[in-house]
Amino acid sequence: MKAKHNTQIYRLVGGLFLLILSVTPSLVWSQSAVNGSVESLKANNGFGNLVLGHNITELPAQNLTYLDGDSRVDPDSCLKYQYNDDKLLTLGDSLSLDAIGLRTYQNKIVNVYLFFKMQDAYKVLSNFLNAYGPCTSRPDAYSDIYNWDTSQLSLSLRYQVKTEIGVAIFTSKEMENTMAADKYSQSLKTSYQSISALQ
Image (cartoon, rainbow, N blue to C red; front, side, top):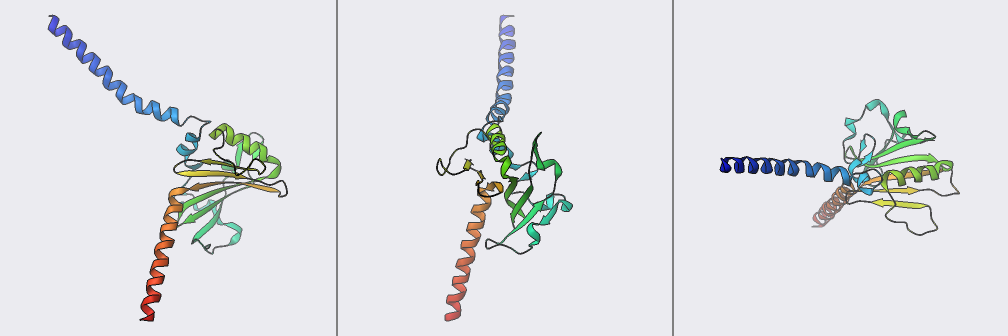
């Protein structure tokens, strides 16, 4: 009888141990992505439904137009779009963005740009401090540049008193690395072709 009772206790303790092990990872993840920390920035990996590294074909086509009507690729072989979504333009009760821009490489989102009026600069900064915690770096104490860096992305908030507009730039580090590797590979190929042509 005592052996049967001990077996039941061992099963109960074992079951509780398995339950604790299965719940712990989700608790750790939810605590690390708490709003107000740079981990929240990492967990979001972009802005709203604009996820860095994702294909723009997953976005509603009617919301995308070429930024400034320019459909040419930039020097990094990227295309720039304006994303039109009124829901994303509102950051708070009294805070709205002017526009949202995207920069893509091979249809994948490299950057998300949030454009705002200069008069809203401190509201945007306050919003980011609340969402992502203290900035991780500033170039110097005199410029209005605030950076949040994680292993997979960065966010840079920039504005100048002289200009009428500010910008927040979300950047995928993985996509930047892919672009750099492709550019290097292309330069090697071009060099090889040039050498081959000389022979």
